Amino acid sequence: MKKKRIALLTSGGDAPGMNAAIRAVVRKALYHKFDVVGVNRGYQGLISGDFSQMELKSVAGIINRGGTMLKSARSKEFMTEEGFATAIRNIKEHNIDAIVVIGGDGSMAGARKLSKAGIPTLVIPATIDRDMQGTEYTLGFDTALNTILEAVNKIKDTSFSLDRVAIIEVMGRHAGHLALMAGIACGAEIILIPEIAFDIDSICEGLIRSFNRGKQYSILMMAEGVGTGSNIAAQIASRTNFSPSVTVLGYLQRGGTPSAMDNIIGSRMGAAAIDSIMLDKVNCLISMQHGDIIAVPYNQITENKMGIDCSLQEMANIIAI
Ligand code: F6P
Image (cartoon, rainbow, N blue to C red; front, side):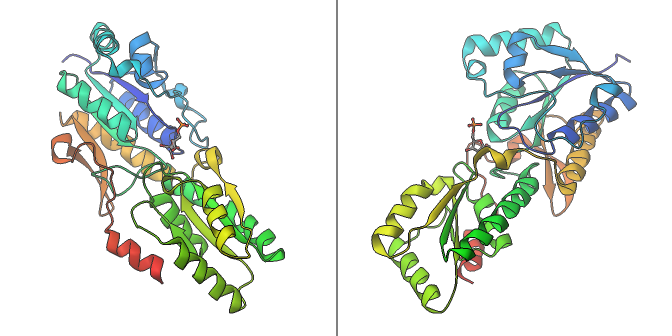
């Protein structure tokens, strides 16, 4: 029987837990006597032919590191006809049987495109935004949440000292998962996410009510998809006597040692991707559903829709508590 040769790449925004998934893919693939090729810098590396043979030792000492040892990129060229054709040519020249893509929704779109062109792919969901259809978990989300929590706890100390309203702007692109869960986890007074409309006047009234009740500081957690922290601060300042502090956590949220959860799920998803290839089950998202890791065919997952998978009503109820 011909030895299977698989390629592995990480694409888009890096996310803690990607290295655990890389490590599991490589180690399980080698256990099954596959050949494994690492592609550097995501889809851009498929175009430039930036491939390297992966051995057991290639993935030693990476599980404790954030980012991705394979590096990543947001490749515009891959979306062009010429770039895509070059990528396909390189994949065929290297006799690749299947590609494991680790990344978010943009990476998933690239994997779907390859599979439509006859290249079998599998996607391991990884983005701190958690904005993917078809899975309840994306790698990096848990670590980012913990990073935000740690930062907010520090901001609480200074906000308490100066009786401040503290605005914390977190990532998430167009989705509010990160802000919502971080806000719940840190006990924020106000959470603003793009999925739920809000009224700045009632937010200000709420802040004044809390202040009059004796609250010494307030945390307003907002998703970047809602706008900028400085804009919300200006709106509050023009309606009240508060002059809120603004902290944009930015890229801090994407780095750092992965949480135990991200490393465990990353390892499970990596192993599941190889199991799926062994069963010839390709063109699937390695998904978490009700705690299980399963392979869901792309054609069962809605394309190009932001993945808000918990009900908006449930979110609204939590925020209203
Ligand atoms: O998708 C992850 C993410 O960190 C988003 O939360 C953020 O909006 C975006 O990437 C930033 O992208 P870039 O790294 O290209 O600036």
